[in-house]
Length: 96
Image 1: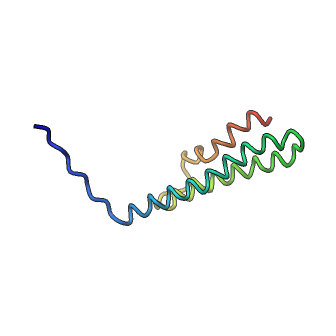
Image 2 (image 1 turned 45 degrees about the vertical axis):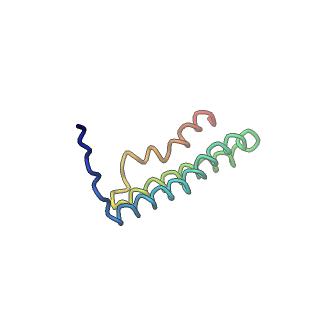
């Protein structure tokens, strides 16, 4: 006979934190990735505007990850910030 482990009930505050984090991730990651990719096309005709958009994508990504950490009451200064800068890092290879 297989014994099933009973799931631990979640606290309502924990669920609210995760829902807020998922919403913030979506709201922050879509513009960060969009600006990073769009900056590649703009940089072909206007290098200054392309780099500006590219930098804004990095700032949005970093603020998104830091905000998610703050929602869970953790320090925003963590190696996870690299995840927020990932679209900027990847497109940086194509931009320069």
